[in-house]
Image 1 (cartoon, rainbow, N blue to C red):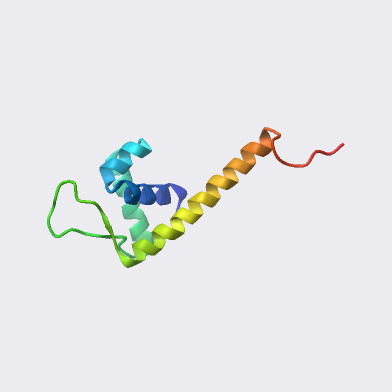
Image 2: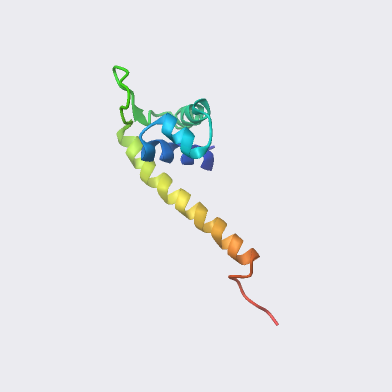
Length: 101
């Protein structure tokens, strides 16, 4: 099963351009982010990032074609999840919902 944590890690890696930068932003260890992405790729059975032929420092990650598609879908899913959470918080704080007398 795909988790929101995996999708957040994936989107953050893409947005920040690297696994280390994503780990800092997410307040996770770099191995945790790497493992999350690896588990996502394994579950889906596809590579999401083009693997560089040589190791270059400060090289931004490159998405595969399916990685680009997943990125767009993941952004949409995470936005909807955030909206859902906000709706529940608003409801709990009586900002939204129906008042019955």
